Image 1: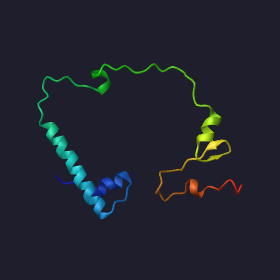
Image 2: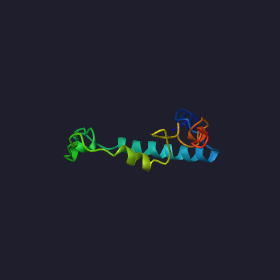
Image 3: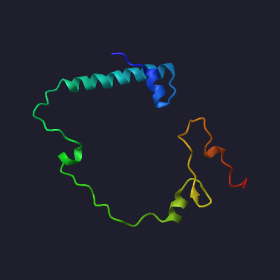
Image 4: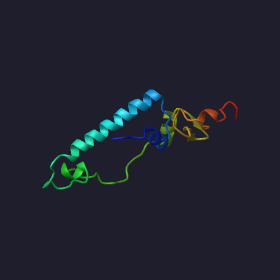
Length: 109
């Protein structure tokens, strides 16, 4: 089976080194091989299951309003706050786009 790892990496928007490409190819082939083994199993007569909850007899918890975290406490716990809001990066670390590190600091305001 052939896998175009460069295409998969491009779709996932990740840059991979040649070593990582080799590892990714090995991992993807392993996953597909495992799926092939699953396809060989005889499951005739086994009813379909649409998630583990039903087969385990679990029921979802009632969606009831309850006390939430106090805003002041949440802001105290946040790593960085500006104007009463929690500062978060625009994207995951390692990206090339501007983010929290590029925002003006409190001292500059």
